[in-house]
Length: 278
Image (cartoon, rainbow, N blue to C red):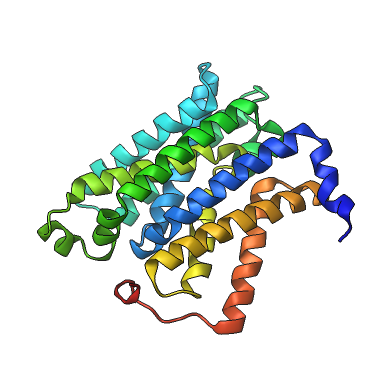
């Protein structure tokens, strides 16, 4: 690898902006990922990210910023999933129905619209060319808020993640923690749109965390390792995206998948339950 491989992308202003956003999202997703895996919420993350497409499409159609449409869709999808679950259906069924419906709504609008902002490839898989300075500000604010919440609510989140019943008996407000975590998840999904696209956000939550779980046993170490991997995958993925001229989302995810596969082959997947992680 020559120095030009590393320096050439920085000749373009958009790359520096995209790199900052990707790093912040990668680290934040890495911090939340272990909680998502241990709580077995991977499907919820996937469903929420797919639901966002409908909100983005509707928002653009009615003159709203894509982040506003995405945020409204994330909140709406969470509410609809809760409503469907309250009628006796399983969480997987609720997510499948809500996510599929909102995703189909987005695809229908995009396929019939001539608005250039509704580029299906960019929305689904990310577009580093579309990252603006305002995106950096938004993601930095979200990152700061989310990391502060994780820092100050780490023990209640950890207790509720491992055993909600025991945590409730010790005074942890489970409903508050569940709502708080869902909000954090929605924040990651919404802010990751430009770099990752709606289809691949869940992978950035899962792959770094799964790789870290294979290496560490203490939950705190798993979180730190996942954050470091999220950072690494984002940086390498953006360079690959630039030089290979492929969408940024798939590039970041593929880098993570390769590292996960190599780790899996080298040490094997540990047969750990959620309770065995300290």
